[in-house]
Image 1 (cartoon, rainbow, N blue to C red):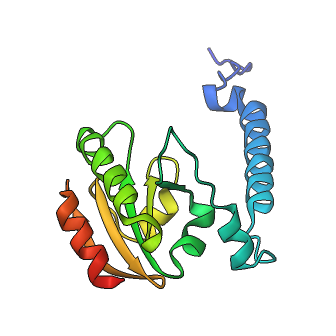
Image 2: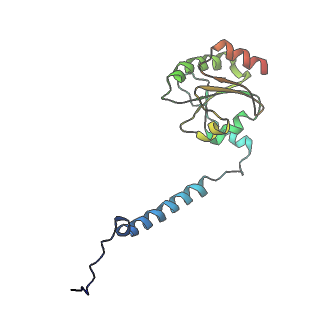
Image 3: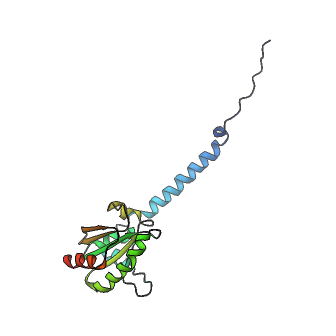
Length: 165
C-alpha cells in the first residue's frame, strides 16, 4: 500500500516566530542607531565649555566634584586632580568616602578632588584600566602620575597631592 498524500510538516518554533524575530531585529537596529548618532562626540564644544559643565553636586558642604565620562578628560586636563573610582555597592568605597571628603576640605583650591561612579561611567574606568575599587588616580595636567588601589589614609593622599602641586 502506497500513500500518495504527504503529511504536513510541523513548523519549528523558530519558523513560527520568524516575523517576530525580524521585527525585533529592526527595532533593535533602530534604537541602536538613534543612541549611537545622538550621543556622538560633541567635538564642537571646547574644553573650556566642558570644564564649565563639571558640576559640583553638593551634598551639604561637599567639595568633591562628581565626574561623568563626558567631562572626565576636560576635568583632569590641567592642574592636579585626584579621582576616586568607586561604586555605591562597594563597602571599601564607603570607608574611603569620608576620607576623600576630608582631603577635599583640607586641600582647598590647590587641587581638584573628584569621584567617578564606575557603574554609571564605565568608559573612563576602562580607559584607565580600573579593575578594583576603590582605585584612586592622581592626574597632573591630564597624565596619571600616581595610582592607589584599596582604601587609603588621608595623610597618604595629602602627601601625594602636595608632592605634585
